[in-house]
Image (cartoon, rainbow, N blue to C red; front, side, top):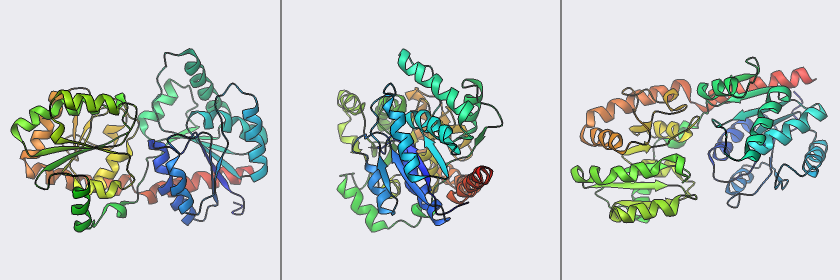
Amino acid sequence: MDKTRPIIWMIDSLGPGGAEQLMPTILKNLQQAGFNIRVCALQIRAGNPIASELQRLGLPVDLIPIRNLRQPLNLIHILRYLRLHRPQLLHTQLEFADILGTLAAKILGIPSVSTVHTLDVFPEKKSAWGRMKLRWFLLGRFCDRVIAVSEKTRRHYLQSGGLPPDKIMTLYNGIDILRFKNMDATQTAKLRKELQLPLSSRIIMTVAVLREPKGVQFMIRALPAILEQCPDVHYLIVGDGVHRAALSDLVDGLAIKNHVTFAGHRTDIPDLLACCDIFVLPTLKDALPTVLIEALAAEKPIIASDVGGVPEIIESGVDGLLVEPGNPSKLVEACLQLLKDHGVRSQLVRAGSETLRKRFSIDLQIEHLSRVYEELTSHAT
């Protein structure tokens, strides 16, 4: 590989979404492995907070504003950008980057990789349906390698997207496990005070972008029944999004405001996980929710919905509890089981630590990603 030429990571935005939040850890480790990384975002969402995290790592971050796919000049702007920086490889993430970046890379003869993070379903809008079909076509025909974040996602792109089996591989997201270990008890107490969490309460926590498919509304509906038997429970919701107002109204309507805290968007997830007793992800669909891997690293007992790629992280009854999605009574049952049984909590945490070590280390991810980069760039030269 020519380490003087960059590998460009192109993504739709650097907002607070899951794919974006993975980038600082992955790119920091790719840097340390000797790769020259440059980042290009195509839109601004929520102020692109991840951009400043990347810049703190010393990574150059560029913006090519793309409002929609119908403007022909968009492709010209990206072609100019790639000609200027002469990357040895382009790694795209999400819809606009996959469509425009993959096409531009093919035109210029640049090897390209895409990571697919979501289980796309056919949308109601015709324009969105057309974009999805176009994305699948371009990834299948022109992208050199497609990385699926879970086996469920890989099978989805094979069956629904029609991608060739030899082009798409599964590579689990890894995390920097050490970030979640040996947390400072003083800092944890300070954070609980800052968030006004009752010192004597047991904290159930969810981290998610607040959209309806994340299912937080079902955990809120489960809370009154949990409080009947465990009145010391407090629910900490970390994240923000379009569904926040509706969730807040639901909390008010159930008269449980004193037992729920909305913390908003946060970047100190390891510290927050140290504050909690049980982690719950009531999502209705998810390709591979990295926050569950983070909860494993923080050694927290986990309850999650049995959907998407979640069973590839959590084996129910072994290293967490899986419940039927959208069912508050099942969440009540699982929460009460963990709140009342210290032995079960300890057993799940021990098994979760072993799962984490074997399958979700950032070192494993970087090792496999490096191999893909080396293979594609050696073919190109």
